[in-house]
Length: 153
Length: 294
Image (cartoon, rainbow over all chains, first blue to last red; front, side, top):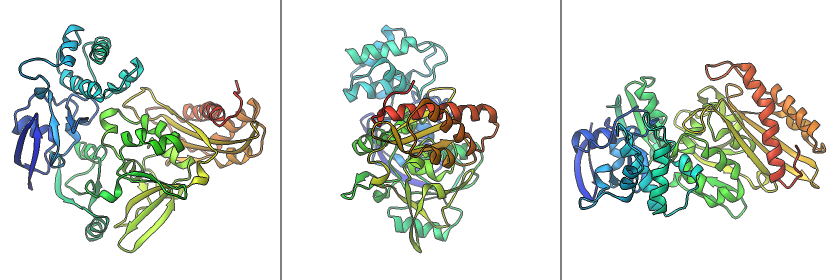
């Protein structure tokens, strides 16, 4: 069953027919080529597929594509502007918060939402906000430091 | 792709109840954080889904002039956590909501779904049980109001008749004014985990030293969330002391029907009930204006 939907991805208006069975993750990766959206667990545990929907981090693997009608979506491809990395991305590089990189897009998007909220976060609150992501390489410390740095800037 | 055979979208409650009455196979979907995972794991096959996401009248949290708090079932956990009415009047529900899943899940999962799943581990349930929440259910035949204690029938089973949907969660002022509470979720991880035990305690303290009312709600201590009537009856009118609190903890175990699962044994869960009921009660006493008991 196909359904026509319109939404904005990284500032670009998209209109396409999606299958009601498709997840937003599948549409973003397979139909629109945003392969920065990673498929990890497929059940909302690991956060690798995180995208921002109207500024809010959600797991795109457990979000039906048809629900994206009228939404504004940002993937990791939409974070750098005019060839320049965002301050969250720079902080991740400076703190060495990346090893294999598979979890990084999700972390950067959650951290971006935190920065854009304008709120102050304690270290414990940062950990809580990042708790929907798994990283199997870094041991998390560098990621937390990177987010602290991005929030402080 | 998800194994979805049919997908319907209702925009009004009436449309939803009509579609549900016409097709008993329809599964209601809102946030999708449970239904889609069940489809993913093959527990639901050839799913016929009815989305209620677009029904505006199921959204929002408000306090009526008579003091009743009405929570729309489409409220997400994040909305519950941040809502000023919840924070000011029934913070024990916000505490519980914050313990559920992780941020991305809380941003989409709804409280209505948490209840209607019928899981004993539902993070909102112990708090809603001690708040004596009432549920408004609507079908083509009309509407009815059911206390949440009667709504849970068994593991994964709730008192939703064919064609009915949950339209309001109601908390009455007599169940929160003058009360303070505390919620403890005991789990192996602080985030993204299912409770080994959930404990909500709500209490009202008279003259700083007497238990006017104590309510204990437990999750994962039986096939459904439950209250502890024996412990609650014992507490009424007693002076606050470490001995009385210890007895309340012991009596709380009597109301449980814990079982052994891979997460924890029955014996361990019973130990947790006794211990965590006391800890939650001690914290609740302080919040209710009583003296701290070591």
